[in-house]
Picture 1 (cartoon, rainbow, N blue to C red):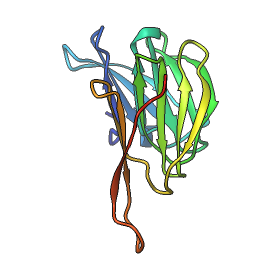
Picture 2: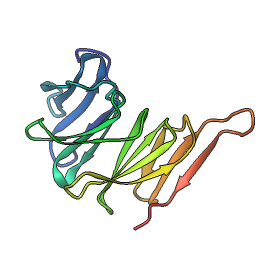
Picture 3: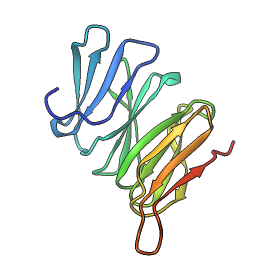
Picture 4: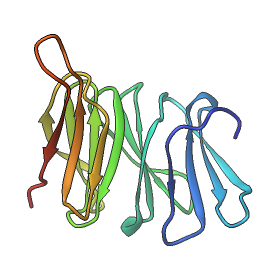
Length: 166
């Protein structure tokens, strides 16, 4: 890697590892069989690519950027940007829900953005949460999204649990 790696995802159907390398302004692609780098996708016009998800159904890699707060959808084969849309600020995690063909983006700005990934990649919902609550985990087997919420002088830290609606 040309700099410190952040989020990464494995291509379950293929042999690739996709790695966010924000300080190098790149997304690195490596061969998980040989461990060797394949290529680097240069990131222009955006910074803070920490969160990443793979949409196996559409052969896309979805990357959330913090500055500006956008979601870019890259083709796994070409590395080019297929879609781009505005998302909530201070994104930290992104997950693909194959059952509903959606992405869930959790953001420290106090929201979870819900994005339809059935080809259009359009935001279909913005759920208010708590400011600073950006770390999340989607567990498909439980059909739940868990969000870590910071404590404050008035409230204890908590894990909020969301059940996606059909």
